[in-house]
Image (cartoon, rainbow, N blue to C red; front, side, top):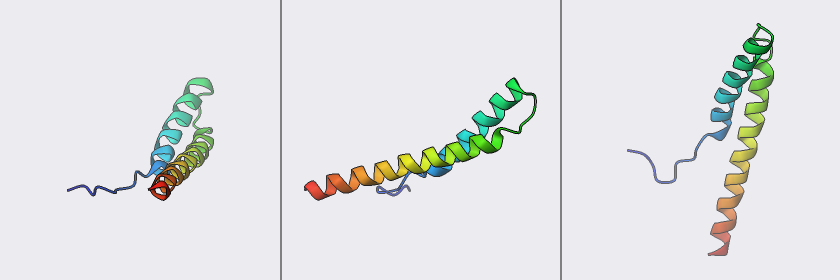
Length: 65
């Protein structure tokens, strides 16, 4: 049974999708997977930013009550 207040792991989701997109585009464009690392880093950073934004948004809505 899922928790009602379960937090979505945006950093993990960003990590997975960033790696997949970086590797896919790298194979299409250059034929190697060298850019998968950059995709991983970008996905991780964007996921962390989104997670932080969501946490701040929840905190602000709780303070208004």
